[in-house]
Every structure is written in structure tokens, then in C-alpha cells.
Amino acid sequence: MKKSVRKAIIAGNWKMNKTRPEAKALLEEIKPLVANADVEVVACVPFTNLETAIAATEGSNIKIGAENVHFEKSGAYTGEISADMLVELGVEYVVIGHSERRQYFAETDETVNKRTKAALAAGLKPIVCVGELLWERECSITEEVIARQIKLDLYDIPAEDVKKTVIAYEPVWAIGTGKTATADQAEEVCALIRATLAKLYDEETAQAVTIQYGGSMNAGNCAELLSKENVDGGLIGGASLKAADFNTIVQAAVNG
Ligand code: 13P
Image 1 (cartoon, rainbow, N blue to C red):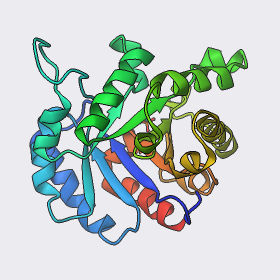
Image 2: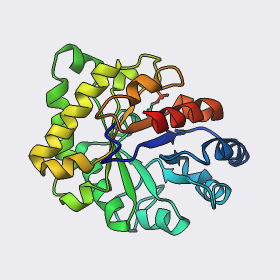
Image 3: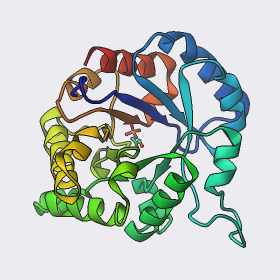
């Protein structure tokens, strides 16, 4: 990453894991390990763990994120959580458009765009996920797929808001499969995302945006991935549930 322009963000995405006591225990374990790390450390946790996680990390350098947010301010949306509800708890980040939500919960680029706008309007920092399916990569349309997602997901969002938005490049074929994109593949797509942002906005805006890689990032492969110029951090699933592994990734970002 370009340290002169951007600060790395290492975010755990816990997905549907951990009860409240388990969440507290994991955060207590992570806290001292990352206490002096000069990178942004974030844990995105299930809704039920948010209050516990915020209390457990108070006064530390760990920021807490949610894993989704609804786009309406309030109303008859059974089972949904609004951006204001998250902000009131003390949540700072929110994952939007994760491929698991696109795949299993009918998330579309249109709803990703609406959720991102709602999050920004409430003062949350969105982590917007994009990524191609395996067959899309095999058909050599990765570039089109990613550029389309970026254009649609960020539609009508002004430059000053895009600068507060984190983009996570997560190739769907690399999530939870143990198959990681090579560092060169990750760099190629993260650079493409930045070039797309430069076209949609301008070079200064594109340089200001943090672009993470996600997909089987772990203690063994993180250093190489994070050494790439356009890889500004990671969105980490499985390895974020193990304190030592998560810390190794944080330290790799410090040195990257
Ligand atoms: P894994 O790190 O478990 O592959 O998950 C990546 C991910 O989906 C993070 O959002």
C-alpha cells in the first residue's frame, strides 16, 4: 500500500459466529496484541454482539463494525436494522454487499448502493464488497464485472463520501475456500478498482480510497498480499476468529 497517502485497515468479518461471551473473550485476547499497531483495526460482528463488543473495546484502538444495514431510516421492515440504530450504539463501520448476502439474501447492486448511501448519511464508514464469481474469471470478464459493480454500487455518491468509503475486493471463489488470489491477481484488480474510481471521480479521490483484499487471507499469505501498492488492508473471515492469526495480519499491515 501507499503509506504516504493511505492508512491500512485490517477488518475482521466474523460472519455468523460467536455468542456474546465468546465475542468478549476473543476481543479481550486481541486487544493487547494489537494495542500499538499503527493501522486501523476493525472487528465487524453479528448484531447481537455489537453492544458487548463496543463495551469490551472501549478505550482501545479496535473499532467495531456491523455486517449489514438497512437503507430506510425506520418503518415496517421486520428483522432489519437501521443506520441510526447502529450509530446510537457506537458502531463505526458496516460491511455492505458481501457476496454471501448477494448470493443467499438477494442483495443487488441497487440495494448495495442504497445501503451505502444510508450508511454514509448516518456517519458510518461503509466497507463495500465487490468480487467476481469463478466462472466470470474463467470467462475473462473480471474487469467488466468489477467495474460494473463499482459504478452501480457507488452511483450518485459524491467524491467526499467516496473518500470515507472502503472498498473490499473479495473474489467469490476465494472466500472460505482456502484458495487465495495470488498477490499479483489481488493487485491487478485492486489497481483496476482505483483506475475505475479515477475515471468516475478524479485521481486524488481514487488515491484517497482504501481498497482491501478479502478471501482466505491468513497468517501465511498476508505479508505478500499487503506488500502490494494498491492493497490497503484486508477483510478477513476465518482467520479473524483466531486472535494470534488476526494479529499476525495486523502486524503484516504495520510492516507492509
Ligand atoms: P475468509 O477469510 O474466511 O475466506 O472470508 C473472507 C470474507 O468473506 C471476508 O469478508
